[in-house]
Amino acid sequence: MIYLDISKIYAVANITGDISAPNLTGIAYFKPFKEGTMVEIEVSGLPGYKPYLLYPIHIHDGDNCDISKNGTFDNVGTHYNPTLEEHPYHVGDMPTLFSNNGYAYMKFYTSRFKVFDIKNKLVIIHEAVKDENTTSFGRKIGCGKITEYRL
Image 1: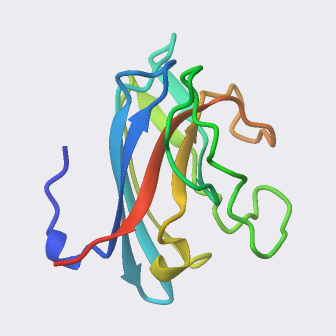
Image 2: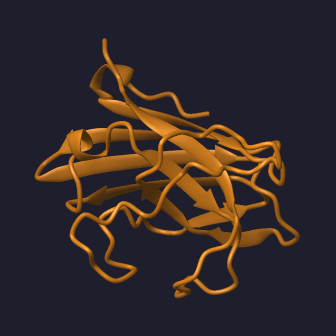
């Protein structure tokens, strides 16, 4: 895992997998930066049949990451989209995770949201897609609630 200066982190999401991705684990950090947010995500245990796969990742408006009786995330709501834009212009759309043998790391800046906009929302990882330009997403295999980080 990454070793960051946690004194500068303002929100965090611990990501876990559903029944189809029991080894999936990860963390997402959200820090205020300029007029938006710096996002840093590290995930391991992504399932897959190929060494390199693309995993859509979004912020959702759901309630929690509780796993239902059938082993799935049922209360994750829809993509965070307060401006009612078409995909891929939802406020909560993030770049696709690029898995290298089940591991993915990315860091990016976005001006689509500020940290206080996304607190208590969910980070959702969808199952791998064949084409990063897709507008439909499969099963929700990873979930983490975004919580405020206090020193």
